[in-house]
Amino acid sequence: MGEPHRIGIVGTGWISGAYLETLRDHPSVTIAAVADLDADRAASVAAGIPGCRARPVDELLRDDSIATILNLTVPAAHADIAQAAIKNGRQVYGEKPLTADMPTALALMEQAGALSIAVGCAPDTVLGTGVQTARAAVDAGVIGTPLSAVAVMATPGHERWHHQPDFYYLPGGGPLLDMGPYYLTALVHLLGPIVAVTGAAARQRTSRVIGTGPRAGERIPVSVDTHVTGVLHHASGALSTITTSFDAVRTTAAPIEIHGETGTIEVPDPNRFAGDVRLFALGATDWQTLPPSAGYVDASRGIGLLDMLTSPSPRASGTLALHVLDAMTALLCSAAEGRRIDLTTTTERPAPVPLLPASQWRGRTTME
Picture 1 (tube, one colour):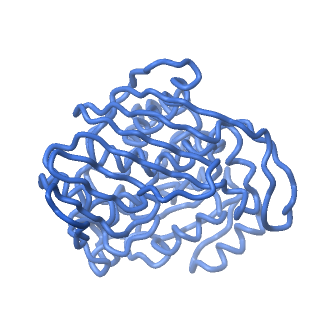
Picture 2 (tube, rainbow, N blue to C red; picture 1 turned 180 degrees about the vertical axis):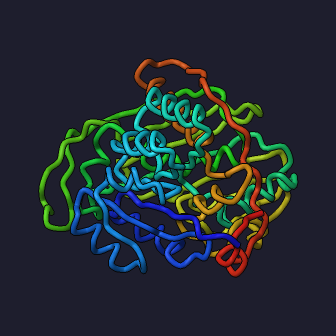
């Protein structure tokens, strides 16, 4: 069976708890060490993991006993941590986006490729039963040839609930780079790679007010666009219209709808692993809820890392994340320049995930 794969976590903020739900007790991995700029927070997290130590960041990255770095830092630090890990011969799986900009991301992937080091990247929510059941239906021809899609993410902004929301409004943040990866990654799974984009964006407020925590009432600056919309031109010929906004109080729009010749599929929130997939077939009188037919059942964050460690073709790969980042940064560039922009990258559609009950993937040391 071999020894469990040793993982070191850099960044022990809020999102680390979601990863630990999956990884802490999984038989295939050991959380050997954690690091954070806040040493007390790292020590607190380490204390809840048997055999885990809190380490300084640079010391953890150089530890030869650790095989993979789980990079859960803020977006602005993604590249620095990943590059240091790769330089030290470590595999890397990170939170999205891959980096804050394309030149840095391209350099990162070139560095990893030259050293034959695997890079993976969130989101892995698209590997759950929600997006995967919708994909299985599309691939089975339930709606005929897919023609178009509409994706909508609209909220008032994360400052309402996050105690330290500053980074959402700095370069590398904003609704597109923060939430767009869920939607664009899902659309690549559903419709394939993107060849060009056309975008528009706006920033109508120069500051936001923190709504909760010890800094409640503090005003923070906004230096990124907070409403981004555009069209994704897929290689298949399908067109996806996407809106990501921190400037909406509420919406009744479905997270994603896929329209085909003979029907429409409603896809649940790609920021979650599960949810109802609904079909409206041509000639029907009402929506039909499709039973889960694909995806990791009851999955949580970290399943993409497990998939990367055990699959010959990782589904949450750095190549896919690079393509999604290319599309997002091109959308922002298109909005600024007022023109269609062709992408410089492409990717294969990741392999579909068969229906895998939690009892299987949670106890497995290999993934199919």
